[in-house]
Length: 184
Figure 1: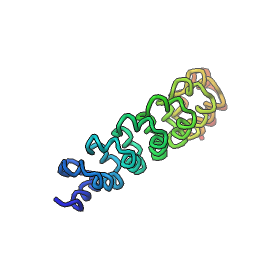
Figure 2: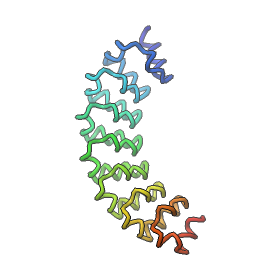
Figure 3: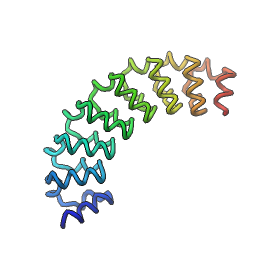
Figure 4: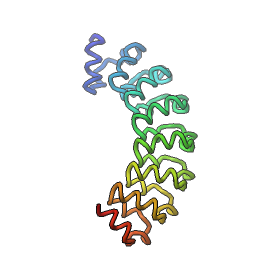
């Protein structure tokens, strides 16, 4: 099989059809992850440590961060590139980034429920929770209980998605302003 045919398999997500020796070839893997970042999963372990390859992989698909070598999950530039693609990539980042306000903010702006993967202290931070529910009302489910009692937070959540009402504190589930906003 030639490289051109192997790249076609990558495009078709038929990763297992690509002979293993291709996944040891840096130029092939670099081209493969540019086509589909998840191809990083099949790359030789030595190439999962290569910053340029991992950067291209997460640039194409943020979920590729899951398959990066652990040290690169601690690299801020790699993590930022991954969460630009999907806030859910935060789950694969080093724990230190789950406390990093700039990283978590970027993640929740692309996908509000990424709040789930943030540090507990940020789930209690009104400004962070507000950003998360503005992006996706259902992010309210991951907020600290104290913020599920905060009318302004709940109002924003139900404005975005009326179904978020079920995550609000019981005391607000019957509030006329909240119910009205949830029905719009």
